[in-house]
Structure formats: structure tokens, C-alpha cells
Length: 170
Image (cartoon, rainbow, N blue to C red; front, side):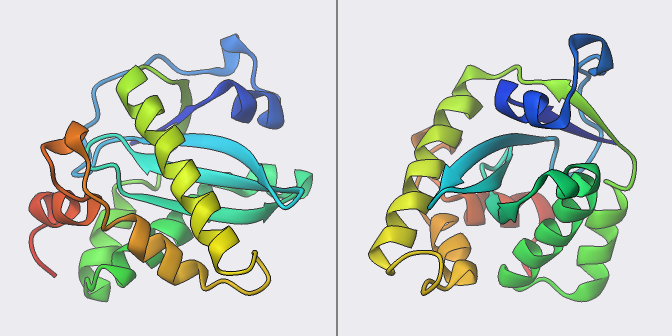
């Protein structure tokens, strides 16, 4: 079961009240749960997904109000793309994605992950700006490169390395 740990901005975007949020529980999935944040880039809404255990991340750009009922689908597609960028075979990707077919929304619980998420967000913004903006950048390369950065909070490893440790080599 996937718990999407939503920031206040995401809760507001989805129209989630405190009563709509599930109780936070320990994850039983291989990668753990994911944090979800809403941000703006070039006056467009975007969602940033960050894994709580590995800090692996990906973003979904161009979010509209009509997309909000489909956030889970966007997550599953983004996760599959991330795993594909990391070199995993389709069978392995399907197995991981199947762990997240059921989902619920919860509040955030880790200040450390939230702090890392803010740093990751700055990296995405900087890389997009350097590449000339959303229109000209290679989003797949930005996602891949962002997951190669070294983080103290995951024992001086990159999210890519932490992901491969959890899932095995591709």
C-alpha cells in the first residue's frame, strides 16, 4: 500500500481536509512511501515526488485541476519511467509498481525528507533554467542527473545508489 505523504500545498490542491487523510503507518513496500509537493515553474504547476528511504525523485510538469483525480496514475507512470531510467527491466518495474496499486493520502512526518525535498526542488529549478526553460530542457536527463547527486542524509550516497541497494542492480 502506497502512502502519498502530501504537503499542505498538495492537500489544498486536492481539496483534502484533515479528516480525509489516512493515519500514517510504517510502509511494507520495498521502497517505502513517497512525499508529494506542489510547486510552480514558469507559471505552471508541477508535482515533485520524493521517496522517503532513497530520496529518489521525479517530477510531473503541467499539472491542471483536471489532473488531480489522476495523481496516482501520474505517480505510477513517473515511477516506471524513473526505474526505466535507472536501467531496470520491465518485469522488475512491474513488480515494484504492483506494490503501489493501492494508495492513500497522509500528512508528512519527516522534517528531514521535507528539507531534502526542498533542496531537490532547487536542483530541478536550476537545471531547467540552465537548459533554457521547460520548452528546451530534457526532463528525463534532469530527473536522471538529479538522482545522481550525493546526499549526507542517505549516508553520502546518491538516490540512484540507494535505489539500487534496495532493489538490487539493474
